[in-house]
Length: 295
Image (cartoon, rainbow, N blue to C red; front, side, top):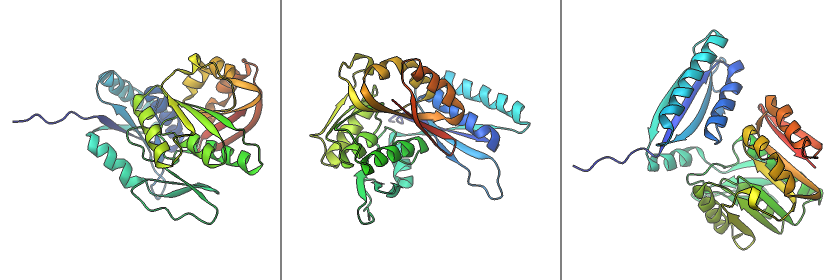
């Protein structure tokens, strides 16, 4: 009798009172290094659902134990129970989970994100970036991605988009691809995850932009070229750790867009980047997530 295939991913769901939900999302992002979904879907208002994913294998047992312990600590702080649950997802279930929730959607005034299995119907003048997430993160639905896309669009609208972009932690490549659709000439997208590199290369081909987008698993610390525009949608922990490397890759007078941090983490990330000689140019937030523009 053939053995069943082991799960590829574990879905994590934390149900927490609204005041603790942001902290839960921050903890899950920091633990996994991946994006999360936050849904306040109850009426009347009740617990907020924070959903993320853990790769099966490796440190899974330790990560589950940390999440269970963290849920107990949050429960004590809130005076209400914070529930954490885990669900095995086979590879095909992961893909179907994305397909079920991923529909064509306008993420900014001038940009629609659509999967290849759905027909997009953009408004006049609206651009469409086709994204097949595979097992990488980045469909434009997370607030941090939306904040970065909005900044890229504002630069394009003011005719301030430079010719070249560095995208650090590219995921599906959505930010680099949007930059090219908005009028950028060429981009370099970096990610240490081979699944993300493969997804970005695939998505570049879906959008007919493979000739203008270079994709690499090279760490940003090993890149020697400087760029007039850098976008890094990472976690607060990664942004702080990579502050020196990111600043070293920025051309004089250039601009760096960083997101993936919560509003409560602004000061720490800003301080790390300012210590490298950068100054805050703009700050924006959406649903508790923040975006800093440094230069």
